[in-house]
Image 1 (spheres, rainbow, N blue to C red):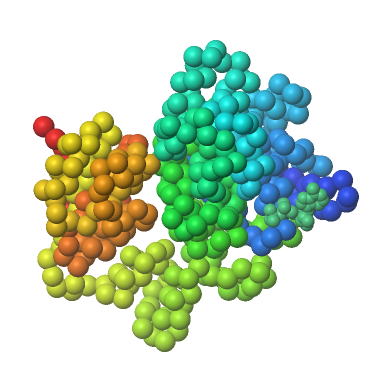
Image 2 (cartoon, rainbow, N blue to C red; image 1 turned 180 degrees about the vertical axis):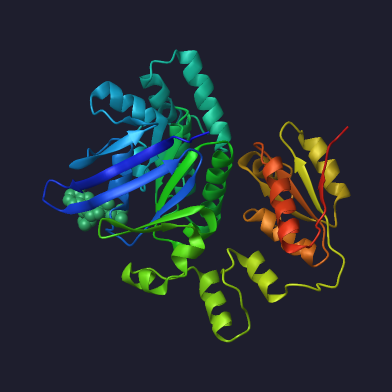
Length: 385
Ligand code: ADP
């Protein structure tokens, strides 16, 4: 089946009113469901490009297509495209404006003409998804940076977008909040949404994105998977970027002859495997996977008590919130699958609590790893009778 690009940008250039040429002859085609990072230094044109994709800015020349159709710039067409292509701004204060969280998230669906009851349902769903049920009456400007970002995301989710564009989604967030937001974006991507972020954080882009689009001085200078883009030292220097830390370490070890291989590791797990490729010499631990959607606190606590000797991690907003409500100490709250595989490799068992339909993804990641590495890690799905 031929795939139509969900977003296509053809020969696009853009100059701001003051004559600044911000984008030059950009051509990009993105497939539905992809997970892409626009990477480049400050002023490269990332934000400008994002504003083109959902029609907030109109190209000086060239065209943007959504699902095969060129964007039209009349009010009705723009409303339709902004609903399908939701944009989360870098600074949440530019996005949140209503006196309460509820009103903020309700703004989009209300404008779409949904009846009050449907608006309420959508807002409730979106708030639950981002883990902020109960925040309806709070004023957005009193929330923490991470909470504001969640409200902004909820406001977009309430309109059921196909594509989400997030400009520097983790800027100004602390590390834990950043990881939580990125995991949420992963979860949404697993659910089928196309995700486009911009960032100058190379570690984040390398770890998270399937594909990198490198932009510099308004031009697209490279498009490819993380290893292709981030192994090219000259390219990175020219773009005022540095390699991701794990690539940097890999290159240093390779230059000393400690490691070899043509592809850099994507993460710490792969780095450890390169350093200790075979003969781990000890029995492997197991990874238990438990979909906790629909479980109540009593069940969770009693199960956790029986798994005392396991490392514990939670993936997905629902699972994390449930763990918190149950007072469970979590060893891992981000990069959970890889961390549990690392533990299994040294013979320790681990339990992953998942929510939001992440079970299949987790099982697959572990079986893919086992196949590729030859380390047969047993993934056990917990199913209560
Ligand atoms: P990035 O998001 O990669 O930091 P931007 O898209 O914000 O880059 O900016 C690209 C270029 O356009 C920069 O030279 C910037 O100074 C310029 N620019 C951005 N916004 C405006 C504006 N409103 N008016 C004039 N120039 C702008």
